[in-house]
Length: 256
Image 1: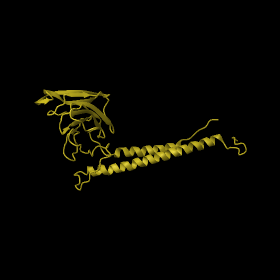
Image 2: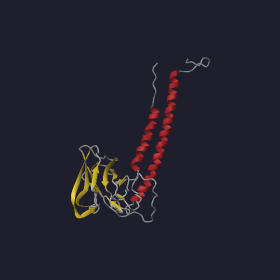
Image 3: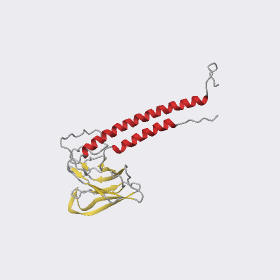
Image 4: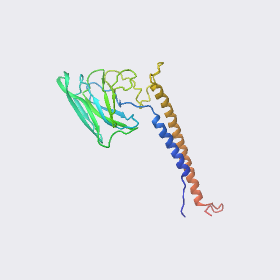
């Protein structure tokens, strides 16, 4: 005897949970270009990973240019292959000769240009990771590593600001200086929120904070609805199985 199990209610509840989670995702605070690990010891060869989100709602990230320092240059620069992307090391003559260890150098790699292949790139709502090995790390306080992010519509965002509360802050590698908490990185949940009595000119900070709370609430609600959906799906399947088996004979315990 064939059995037909209808999954309408369970499917509807599951779809509702998925919809709630999907609505919560776009409401999370905007992330900026940051370093996954922003500290390194002097003299070490650091493997740095740049986290690059696409913040545009209509274009993909198709290029990334990392500017390296010329006053404290790295003598070793190596990229890690990324599927769908090519990398170019740009070597230029330094403004002034620099002594690294016992060697005086007059040229060095001063930028890295990543370019997406045709049909590739970082789409809307996606995050790209760009690893690079740099060394030896100079014995200094910190190193600013500006990044230019190019989009498929021809626009460019320069992550090069260094002031407090900058709209497009540059990634910073801390060597001897103590790291500064990055309030723009949505992956850092341990940092205490900064409270200020001076409102932002465009209200972006307040908007990001309020949006983050809404996103968290919707995320929890989505998980709760998903759990209810799973429970109801189990009950529905059990009832369908009992209905297919037919009523049981109280005297024999078998099917009628």
